[in-house]
Image (spheres, rainbow, N blue to C red):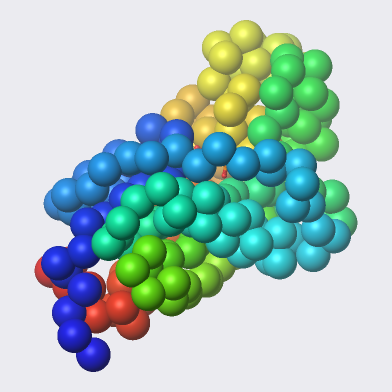
Length: 196
Ligand SMILES: Cc1cn([C@H]2C[C@H](O)[C@@H](COP(=O)(O)OP(=O)(O)OP(=O)(O)O)O2)c(=O)[nH]c1=O
């Protein structure tokens, strides 16, 4: 297959974390956030949900950019059979942290790359197991009042103050922060796009 390095890279995300992770890989890219209504693409199967959402985000942006590889991702927290997205309010953040306290959960991220020239798309997901320590009511209050939980799935940020609460992680740290770089590398390799 011909190299796709001549195509530009576009990150279909408003997440500053995803931007930072891609920057750390020395990649040159532009950002076009995907404007989709995430509530339209829920599923009871969490893997299906993150993969589908990453596809929808990539598709929404691919229609706006020519000759590009469009990268998109979606991250959720799964506790038992419950899916926790971004809390969106302080009471919801408190509730999520109460649920996650002293529990193991899974962070799932779907990632897609779409070639806007050919329409070819590749999707993958990563599952990371995380154990959160037992949190007191006061710790939950204080953490929520920092504002950090608000735009993070499961109401914590492992890359921020939330790291204080994490006893163990099995799997990819990058995936928890929102972009599984090993999966992305594997997909870009399939597209014959060289990063190194
Ligand atoms: C669990 C966890 C999630 N998160 C973030 C990653 C995602 O950005 C966010 C989940 O929301 P997403 O819907 O995956 O992404 P987003 O809305 O931030 O950005 P976009 O859809 O434009 O790409 O939660 C952390 O930053 N740290 C964590 O420890």
